[in-house]
Length: 551
Image (cartoon, rainbow, N blue to C red; front, side, top):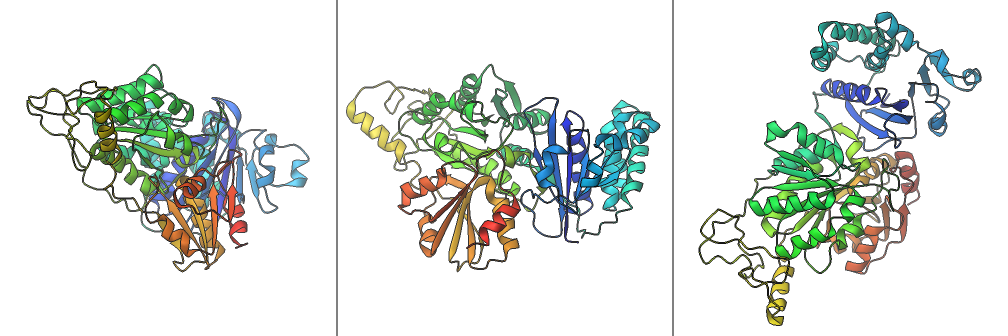
């Protein structure tokens, strides 16, 4: 056996997240290669959510339709998943959760989690029994589980800890019957996309966050709040997105390293402040966690639908940098780089993630962090905030650091920061701002596969894992994959990659192919085929293997 797929299905608020987090972290510590993804309805409670946990001996990058084991947590958990159930799928749950006809239709194994949990002390322990059963299937190290249960429940009393351990033991013994054999390696750290972005921002020196809650961007803010003391971060919930982004601008002006996190609708409200960053030459970092629009759209689903919005947000012309994490490692690295780029070039930097990227979790590989760059100077009495320079980047000081007055203006201004309507000054200031990225060093795209390709697949951001795994499994040696984590400015090397290919294929999680349009605009190169998905789900491995097999 090379891999297994385990799906948990049940209503919101009933413990699926807890089971997933405990199982994935314990199996990763045990040396297994783990990937987890979620499909969440827009409900606080009720509805039906699913979590898939994949364990594999090789690279894993997305979810699969294939289901080896399906654990049902309520009577309605089965019927939304009929297209993901195969003849071989083992469906596990209490007899009362199934209809009579289900037993002739599916491969059902009865497991009375609720009754067993009640015998231990409380039906709520059924989640711990399921967790134990999954870990028993994979012969997980029990000591790690005892430690995790103690850490989670110790503050609620020893009785609760011991009853959870008893529930785990009951489930573990049930799971041992299956004896799944997959490779173990060294202990791994297992994190989510949310954690990757937030770790990266903290590594970049982020010390102030202002935001208004909006899914799926809120978890980054919540993590920053949890890490306030550990990393010295001040977190402020603003009254709306406009207030949040302007607080962030003010924090940068005062010398902080600040960020806001939002989604498309909230980002749209921030456009005037983004333009203020452009003319005021104030650094700015925004995390935009994309979801399907327009309007409220599908608030808990995924889509790469905001590239055009981010690229053109804010009135007037000014430089910006757009980054899109691909792997979890790149999420940490780009989270840090965003602050160093914003600080050095005094431009807005927008991190484009999405619901799929943020909610997935996997083992973290090697992360290459850089030395943080701080570009604040001590002002003199004759300090000019917008001084003309060869690079276009003026020396930036902050109030109270030196003898000069730090003037910032949203009107056109002179070198000193005084309002002006002088036409010649206007041209010089525009030219100064527009050349700030002339010496910017691109973050190069990653090429996966044969460098002597005939067909080149192009993708960006969160499609990385699915395309990479599908390409590796397809065995297609004439096809390679070019993945972009800097989407604007378009890296200068882009056209050279495109010109080598006989056939160009674009894969994006949106309806029109935003990145393909950008490439055509900047290079004149058109794609031979576009593979676009916009139903709210990420790409799965099977559909991409089938697609790649046609090249």
